[in-house]
Image (cartoon, rainbow, N blue to C red; front, top):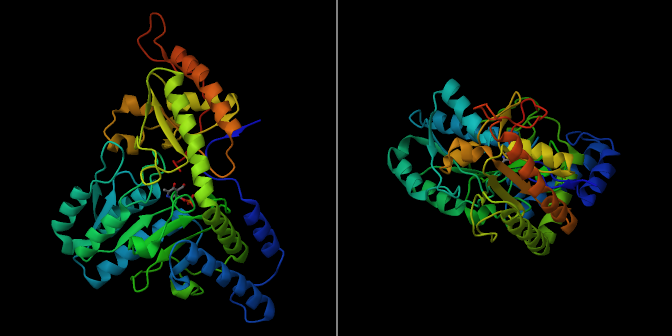
Length: 413
Ligand code: PLP
């Protein structure tokens, strides 16, 4: 039996979402068509929009359906940047957190390379939390040139919960809108768009038990945005493309289930995670918990356990654990089979050698005590084997790694 401990990459579909998807997919009807089938599909989309909005403290009219988190992040950064720059050509500065997901960082970089953006990274501290003083300074230093701020709600690698409401307050005091990538937070932590005061928020269904390829950008009323996709003018022109009624229904069903179950589920998942963390720290020397050592939900995602293991490569451990039936992640990017140290860990001050031993376990609604038992039984022997394999061979000064199947072009999720 496999212990699936990679919920931060993608979460198994919740039964409610599967049922909602299947029943809606069996029906014909373009939500923009005027006949009865079209109106029925439109009703499914609008009911789902209402449910989604209610689950994140927004108005239904503020929800823009997208194909997931990456599209929502692209729409937010490019759309806000273009709109703000059009209103005031001086506004070319984009402030993004140094530990953001590539769906934000690479968009910012693209804007710098192709659209004249002046991108500045806002540093994080040793646990991966945004340095609000640095943000304050960045806003004070030429605030009238800042187009937008983008800071994630919770980090996908180390699970650190960010001071998003405080950051939004600072941004607004400087007259700047704030986007938050809440892909890892929605469905796992209480998220209230209005209470947090953010202007735009990205979410992704497959991180909370909905389908892959579905998500939304929640855009506060009155926030200017230039669309990325042009065509049929759906979503009030913010995102053209035929609306996906089954995906909308499944997303809303998954999120409603996640939010309803959250009080018990997050405590249950956090208790499993705490046991996993304690066991990981005890299973070998040189295992260090990364991210916030305070494990409460105000500090760290309930399902996140992230460690570095000294003297090991995280990807080697990953393959050894996989062979033992335990699925987890290194959390960081790897390109063309070559692992790269995590930019999140480097931003938090680790050196490349420390960052190389990263291992992320992420738990969610389907996780059980048996999954934790399986991980704890497998990690000690895997660490021992990986260390033996990477110890310098007799007569050789290089480090050898255990054979690991290369994975092409995977990106941290
Ligand atoms: N942002 C964060 C923080 C993520 O963890 C992910 C997941 O991969 C994404 C964005 C991208 O979301 P999606 O897979 O829906 O494109």
